[in-house]
Image 1 (tube, rainbow, N blue to C red):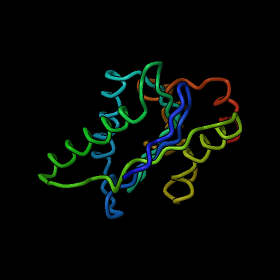
Image 2: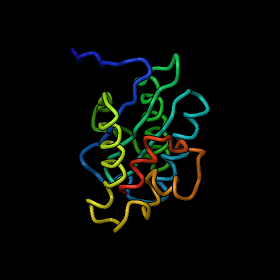
Image 3: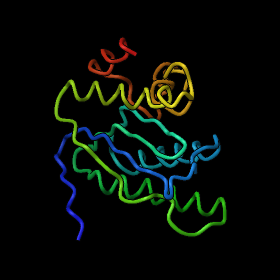
Image 4: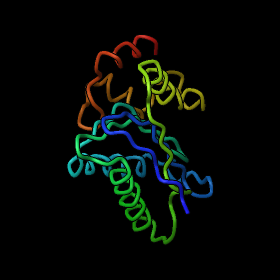
Length: 166
């Protein structure tokens, strides 16, 4: 039996999900766009703030804060399952897209929030996909720098402080 997920009302979470078998299912721009469209649809269905994200070729990172009365598990289950259905339909496939349940870590401090934001943004830099995090089209920093706030939230004061370090 699975251990129940520990959730705190009003908390920020660092969420990760890996593609099944370590495949590079998110490698193409078309599929990354499909995932972003799914998250945009989720934002219309559920109240949550997406403070940061990055879509890598074989996994995702989200810094997410469910709204009042919302449940992280329901939000993520919807996003991941709807994306998987759309992905499988696109490629005429069946079966699992995601490796297992998403992982989530509660952000417990201001410093942890900043560290997590920086970690998520710098994933493509560490993977040597880009030289600067703001160059990566499928990360929150690119959206923030271009003032595109239909997916990611405008940065609050704490995030603005982190942006000066990136």
